[in-house]
Image (cartoon, rainbow, N blue to C red):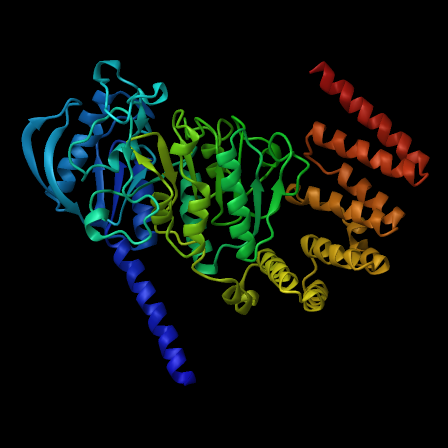
Length: 544
């Protein structure tokens, strides 16, 4: 029986690998032949994923991110569609007729692409053309839909669709369909984009996805719930439930604004949130990096209006900071027309590829949405049990977060003693600040203040802490106070407040908190010093 089970598992793994190789063989990669970085990204991606070199289509394309409809039709759509038909990727009969946008009409009968991947150097969005605007019955009654501005990728999704109106939107037939028929799938080309502020960011995005697929996605999860519309908040609540059911322990922000810069955000593997125009909070800390393979989405209009900036909007900054996958809007998409994040999370967690999950979660095409990332990427190809089994082969820091996820699973199953035993063993063998804080919290929760103080005491002896763990160090200080270990707590604050590179507003916030803590402990020397230093920082900020 055991031999049979091993054979079945091996067979299942072989089938999955075969399916992935088959999908890679049907990926078509689009590059701009006039952009050396575009060609380099296309070739790098094809090599890393085992995509045949013949699947790369390099065309002379417009170089601007934003183009007109005429530039799109003449410079992108028509040459690409012609080439796809010529190579047999799209099965269609070209006609002599031209549609209202200037595109050649075709009679399609499907396509054989798993995904179309467009590389940095391919235009991003199409401006509204008033001369091409016309009413589309059932689609343009509302003023917000009376436009033909669009994402390039959203139009390319309909390369094999046949004639369609460019005004308003086209309903996505793959939306909420778990197993579409070949006939249905043949009407939509699933498009993903490898793009970002710099070519090096895109290469890192490709590598991060492959690393995470190899080891399984590892890290912590963060969800910003509170936004301006109930529908989006409901999505976020569903995301929290799904991540919790998958044995993650999401950090949630339910206050006004976004996650503050004081919030813990170490090893972010999943971030979903809203609602601000430009990247902010912990994402702005020096050296901020996502975990390898991270999925990060921030809902906001124009979140992908440009991918050339590492500070403007969200999608570009996310890619620059190491995210492997994100979605966004190139104009004003309206919430209900964006990727539904609850559905995206659901599909990814059940093992779908990024490309399939994104189209499962997207209600409309020929609109303003874009998917950034490797569509073949399966972030949850490896489960927690596999990661635990291979824990010793993982990079030390990643291994810590595998253990943290297992601690959550044990505690959720009512096995608090087993969780504490595992945490103690890991702290002896591989001590770390994230694990120490987790164990300290367990001990405080069961009333063991002395044990918590002993566990967290090492924090007061640290000297240099990377920015990603500043908030953790502050948590350790607060927990030491809770454990009655006042001097180690204040010494931990001393360490925190002298960290190089800390923004003045963040240092001032924590300095005021440290001063209150010192005053409560009757350490007036520290309290006065920190109050004076905080006042000095406040004065400097007022002068700026």
